[in-house]
Length: 305
Ligand SMILES: [Zn+2]
Ligand SMILES: [Zn+2]
Figure 1 (tube, rainbow, N blue to C red):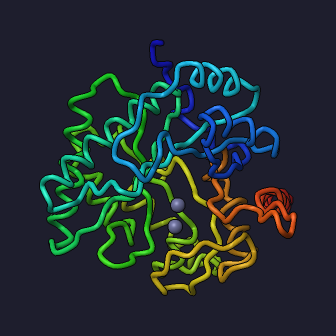
Figure 2 (tube, protein in one colour):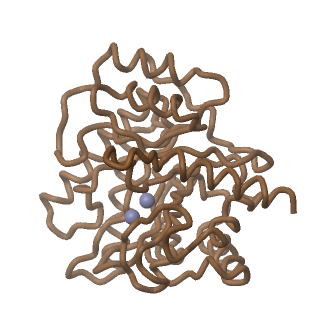
């Protein structure tokens, strides 16, 4: 099947956010969309293969056909993929670096087959290296992947991180440095995770701190590069550098912080994805539905203001 060119590459900023959640692909990729539609999501995020393994069998052609049929549902999308956590595009270990780059290239091709326009990836961990050395390695990996696949239209999105350990991406300046070293900078973008930026020290509960963060993001990476948000509340406090997701309104960020993001017209039309724990069958509570409901209420209220 020829790769379909994603038609979501230029999001409209006048639209409402596109709310969705990370969904399981157990039983085939199409299962994830089925569940997302059932939960009345606007979009979703998926892994494009088992995220705990380096390699995976090719996507099943029937599953891919079912995925495309469901993706054509009016008003649904744009879908987002998340890269495997094993991938470290900054690794100083030659073998791990090569493996990471190859696995990442494979995931980009899978996204192309599934007409998924964005692949979110953690920028990587520096380990023993200096931050600037690690940043150069990430840029070199992306440059190579892009030059080897000139036809690829999928956009990797570098995700902000909580800055735990030696993780890159604790500030927009770090992401900006990677982007500035790209030969084709327009082929990459940024995903902002609310839990991660908050844990990294951006206090998005406070209106002026939120504005300052957006101004910094604009200066360092450019707002047009922000193509996706991850909406997670935080179990750790601001500046804790702890990556622990909480349900919307149940963590340290709280409803006020999320109102700033979902009501911000500069990010209208973008996929905003929950990566919060799923419902537990014991209590019968469907957390995705509860979190979506809360986000939609906050977005509607913010619009009325
Ligand atoms: Zn995230
Ligand atoms: Zn996280």
